[in-house]
Image 1 (cartoon, one colour):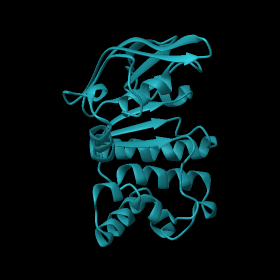
Image 2 (cartoon, helix red, strand yellow):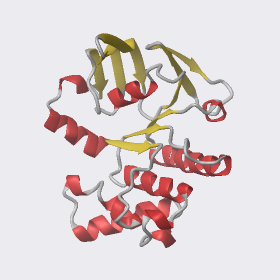
Image 3 (cartoon, one colour):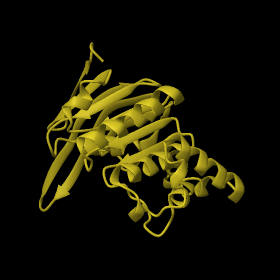
Image 4 (tube, one colour):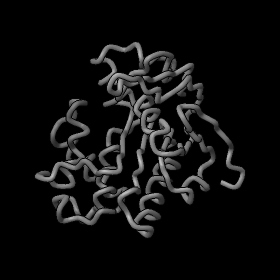
Length: 227
């Protein structure tokens, strides 16, 4: 479970200060699915970075299963990210010189998973997202939707507890968007993940059980009765 209390994030911009998050209180239960929306620059991605331990708040606490991520050393924070949190981004962030299978394997290297098991788990993860026939393909040989599937497999191969996605369909057309959302929703249900996603797409938000809206660093959360 995530428990955020009084989370403030300020950045220096020139001679001034920008407050990206202005006292966020938020609880995300295990297995929850939350979509985060709001205008550009409102603090959406900043909040996701806090949840993923990719950045630290200026003030406040970011609790994950009772541990305040904001207070962990960099080494311990890296360990939490590598073991418990999977990330999917708008830009697929695949290594162009590695095959689909090798890209997925990179998530297991920090965990010390040995070669044979690493290859088997990567192949299984790619099969789970419908890419069993594409293990040896380079990113340039894959469509945008297929590249995002590789990125999803890479995020899930380490069997994380949390999946964080920042505009994962932003670079895809409508049909590919629907395919990727089907994959993500299936993974969420089958694996019992805590799934938090930033998106501008209202069609996606309407299907989420909970929607958080951030404007000027402030958050409101509502239940989606029709989801």
